[in-house]
Image (cartoon, rainbow, N blue to C red; front, side, top):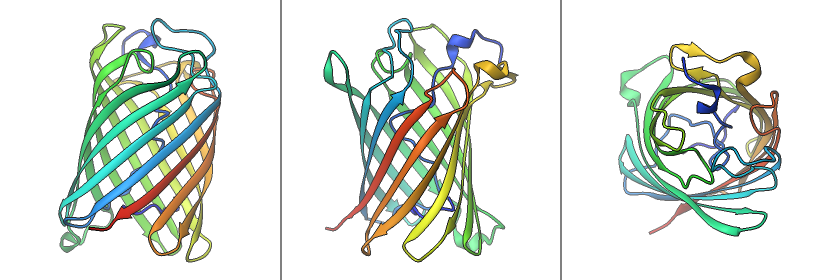
Length: 253
């Protein structure tokens, strides 16, 4: 998976902050056939919510860790399993859920003007970390490189399958990434993540989530890839200051 990228009619309670475990915009690439990849996401919410929202715990001062193991099944198809954990003041370290994902991409032989892919993910979370305890995410992926510049877009929709709020709707969660390669090993980027409402019905602007993450991607040696960034929320509806990191490691047989 390339890391160098240059790169609604329900109550407002149906929407909460953008996923703070896996903070990443997807590229269209998949793991090579029969290859294993390990990816870790380690994030800290410096400024977030400070009171319980039903069973959902305050997000401020939480540390989140996601371990992601990927297997390339074919040249154009991969599957991934996630294990999530978290630290929050009081309870300490806790189990925070698990996920399963399948991602496919269009073959190069199609000669499309943009690289295309799509991912589907099942998500399972304790109520303390997400009021959507079971969800289905559908993530179309569009990617385009122009010289040193690369653009990635993920117009995500997510279906609430089980929730402590009793809702079962499609949520709109767009994300994107723009960056510039400044050398063979370093790229500067800005990422956007949002939650704008339910499919067909946008929330008022003050109740939407919009977050920007300036960051840097660094290739460490020939195989390890590191991304670090700082996220700023533009509304009080989501987390307002988040530190995030992602490390990708290919696993040799």
